[in-house]
Length: 174
Image 1 (cartoon, rainbow, N blue to C red):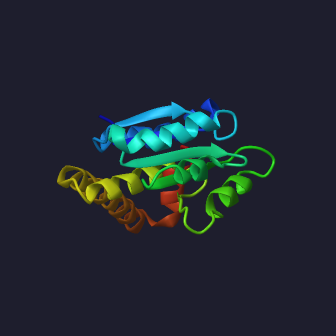
Image 2: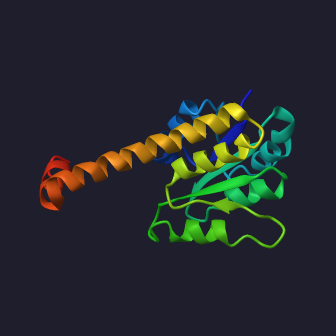
């Protein structure tokens, strides 16, 4: 049974969040992905959020660009934590989605991660779930330790070869 519901306002956002979905899976967190628009399918959006808790969902991640009202609509219909992932789309380069997600009225909170940053949304959802799951807590701790080791390895290499060689070795090949 999924514990995290990921709701996309549009299928065009799916490619941008795939790495975050992969991270949820690597952390062993069951999830479901839906396409439900706050504006084109508002009844379905409200229905999804209202029924999420009874279906075992513990955290909802709302992915939307442009007006990005999806997080707010879902949050208005549930007491579950809702995390918004604003998507860079349209002429305002995602700024509209960031503001729409951030500027919720008092009493209807939505957590917001950075633009296109589904990985942070996945980690925040995992940290919330880790409050009641030792397994997920362990997975998050292991993920963080792996990140730590990667940074230390890069620093060691930088110290060994100097910044000019490091730049040539690590950035010319990309």
